[in-house]
Length: 114
Image (cartoon, rainbow, N blue to C red):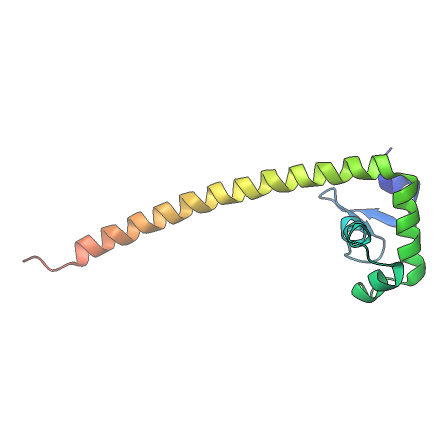
């Protein structure tokens, strides 16, 4: 059972596997992180105006009720993000190396011969 199956009216699973607050693009981890940082429900609602105070309370109640499952999901999200970041850095490094090599080649060809 996935987390959003507990409360499909509250949570929506994206095709990428991220859990969002239904009807918004707000990830559940954003709300939970604000809560962990000490924000009150009212402050969270101010930070995320797309959410009603009732939705914030519902998300926090959900988190506290299914804390072990949510924490597991959050750990997986962190791992997935690290893999994606590493992949992008590797791809970016190869691109920059290729670009630098092409630039050096052009400069050597375009340089006047003495």
